[in-house]
Image 1: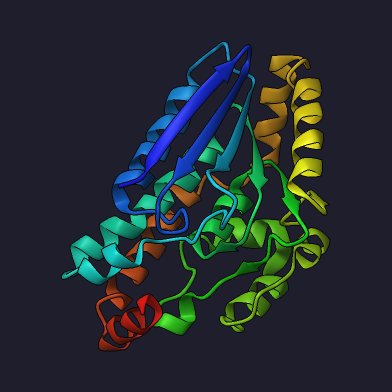
Image 2: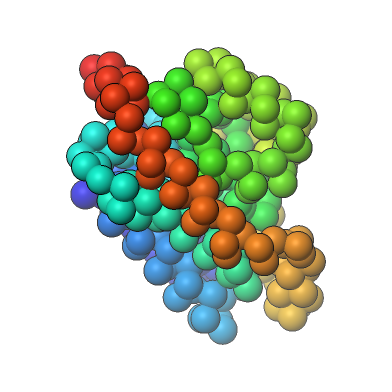
Length: 249
């Protein structure tokens, strides 16, 4: 079923998610991550949140294919994709800066998670891909977060080339990643130094910066759930069911 684990040291919270299927997300794990961001946002002792995934493989493979295949009606589909909407909204509303550690490849919802972080450290091999349209749906819920970072043109390029991986260098150039490194060791050394530095800054100043970074996104409270409904409808199509079976194999 996967896990969400949080370790708090001084005023830094490190949230690690894990799922045996390439760190993908079933609905229960999405809810746990949402609840964790909401709880940490209310913890006055926390200044910085680091988001990472376990292992040395993929950062995040997006939605759980097993759960997508099990969806049998519109309500179930809409509810599942609303899980990603919940996480993104929790991240943008969280009054703490969220720093992403993107150690490996990210697909679909994993790209949405990276885009919803306030600052990201990645590796050159941390390639990204939006494969949704190839399985008959689309990156509807995560699109606002991704477009906010890389722009509509780059978002379109990813969406309309669903089988093509974009390199870590590409993601850096477009603004999805803030800094990239050749190795995990280099990434972690820089991440450790960065969070030690920024966690010592004025908490109130960091809070006000967070508000400014996400100005103009209040309408996502409605938009992301409208987008989830679109995905919830499309996931029921015969095209999508067939495509999911092929991808799973």
